[in-house]
Each structure stands twice: as C-alpha cells, then as structure tokens.
Length: 160
Image (cartoon, rainbow, N blue to C red; front, side, top):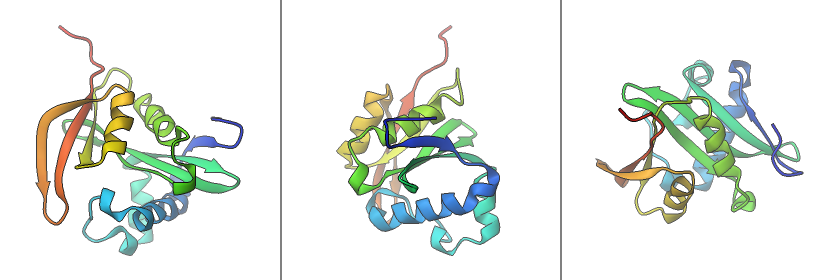
C-alpha cells in the first residue's frame, strides 16, 4: 500500500513481531506521556509476548527510507474493535501518516463501530480522530499516574 512518494503503509505479519517491538518501543521513548503504561512494561516483554501481539491484534506501519515512521494497532475488545498505539515519528508528523494508519485499520472491520481512548489533554490526537469521523463520547476513565482518558467512537453500524 503506498502513500505519498516516500511513505509505504503495510500490515505486519506474525513473523514481523520484531518490527512491531522496535516501532512501539521507539514510540514509547519519543512520547511516553501519551501512552498508557502496561504491566509489565513493554520494554521487558518476552519475544513470545511480542509474537502474540501480532496475532491478537493487527499492527500497521508506515515506512520511509527503510525506517518505520508510524505505527498503529487494532485490537478486539468485548465492546468492539479499539485503535491504539498510534504514533508518528517526530520528523514525519503532520504528513497524514497517523490518519492513514488509523484508516487502514478501521477498514479492516467494516460495519463495526470502532473506539479509541485519548489521554487528556491531547488536542493533536483529538483533532486526528475527529477528522476521521470519531465522536467524543461521555465515557471517561481515570488512570493512576496518567490522568483522564476520554473515549471516542466511530459509528459505522447501520441504524434500526
């Protein structure tokens, strides 16, 4: 899947788990304040846990010049598909990389509402999701040591 002349977009396969790991850890180093801490921290995950992350969710990446410059993941939760781990390399921001990655993932679940949680305040993330049609819901949650998250929903189900 091609984006602009310099950026290619693709889904990772199970055997690409090392790419998911390196990109995700780069995102956490770059912008730790916008990602929820996990237990144990992803930097200590085993190879098997990273392999599993490529089979329990769908990772999409953007690549430019042989380097991963964007990342996003789609997982399934009991209440529907969730987008997360969205990141663009600082030198590649404002080039529609994140929006393209999110749209690729959303397209994987046609007819299903899709959700995302956004740590507040994060106007750039909120602008991104709203530009893709996500609407802020009334749902919030407090995350210890992080703050408040607000849930956004992309409604895609046909009405009654």
